[in-house]
Amino acid sequence: MTFQYYPKESFMHKVDPVSKLIWLVCLSLSVFIFNTAIPEFILFLITFTMAVGLARLKIAFLLKGLWVILVFSLGFFILQVFMVPGQTLWMEWGSIRIYQESVNFAVAITLRMLTIFISSLIFVVTTDPRDIVLALSQKLKVPYRFAYAISIALRFIPTLEEEARVIETAQMIRGVRKQKGWKNKLENMKRFTLPLLMSSIRRVQVTSITMEAKGYGAYKDRTYIRHIRILKEGTILYVASICTLSILTILKIVG
Image (cartoon, rainbow, N blue to C red; front, top):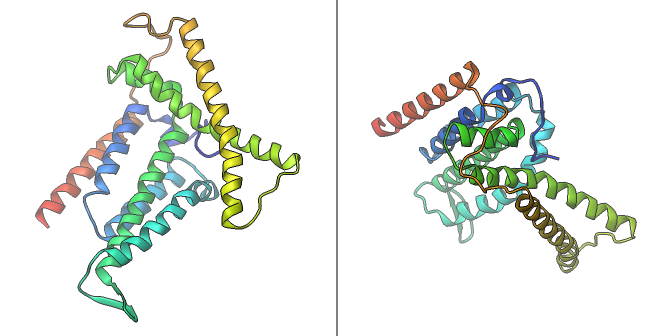
């Protein structure tokens, strides 16, 4: 499964959730500063290098998670190429004209989406959902009920992914195979999504009943067995992220 926490020894695993959240926000803001391909490619390359080097994620694992966003980005890329106006003609097929500015902008937007996706994947894979609740409650003073809601969302993503695999395997065992053709694909999607939706609803109901039975949210504050500390790895990460964002903003203003 892609979207779930994997315990491992790496630099990003040692960083506390607050520092990683600051890094994620700074990186997300940085990719919106520029609208050209080269700066976006540099940010994408840095993020991809951090995923492989600092988070110790395998390239095959990243590609497995990227294929969904790549399919979506391809359609968005084609739409931007043909819809965004430009001045410098690059290619022409009859009445269809493609401009260099359009391609440059489309590549930049696509790389921006990939960068945000990889950075979010790093955050999810290297951060224990329990630490997210503790960090939001202890460091950012977020009410623990809201912090726990975020944790449940992160926990449900891998759970739904596993449920989807179980449903697909069960249908294959019963002789239900995927058929080709757009009409059959819609039928396959309907047959696949309805059991997944019903399973998700049942899981949400069980979680809600369990929280009510344990009196969750009955008190304004709660006690903690473990406390989150910001180590030197986290300090290095969030200071570097804030400095990078400041430098890029200054360069954009000056340039």
